[in-house]
Length: 338
Image (cartoon, rainbow, N blue to C red; front, side, top):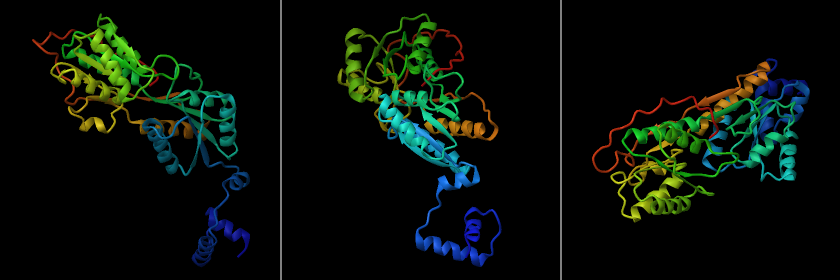
């Protein structure tokens, strides 16, 4: 068969008889032929590939975000090429960006969860349509952003603990890529708005061992604390272990609330109250923004969702006679990074 006939079968641009179509597909299968996306883009003028640049791909947040992007891209008949940015060293960032742009990409989504992601965004050319998944304080105002409003969620989670009658809420913080983490900001704003003094222990790691160490320090400095809000579930798991080792019952003596909604929390003893972060929502939002930008040349600048508070067995009223809950300010509209 002629080259035009094979091309018609591959592109579906013109009807071909069932017999010829079947013969072409048999040959494709036998030869292991794969269409060349770059060549197709040159000929058709339409690029059907988007780039995703990320500092990490294996952690829960990045993996969930990428899955959301892929789900939407598949429905739009786009392929996704993922490029890992090893670190924020300029030479490594340039190599990653050059690799991503060596493909015939129509646009890019940057996972701005860490320093490599922040650096990659700055290195992309202004002519390329770009959307950010996750926001930091340094995100340019003219770049569309899809994010979860962790600051608002942390504010509401802290207010929930205060509404149970706790005299205050202590906090274990986590590392931030750029500036204060939205989770810590939301906690602080809720405590301060209630007229209370904020007490926090900020760790340079966010694993269970860091939570264990931070809880030991808080027990030493604030032995009467009755409520603890942790910036992620791993910190909460470590903190709970240290509290239980010290003879503190959860939640009878102290309430513990996590953040992110990882699977082990449901099966912990007691089950961990937490804030559920659905990272696939970020990915789907970022992909929709990018495809709107590609289709029309414009899109809304933000796609933001507030995570869900999951109340489980690790939180309850403080010990002793129930305190009279205060009246706390209504939740402000806190647009902030995760």
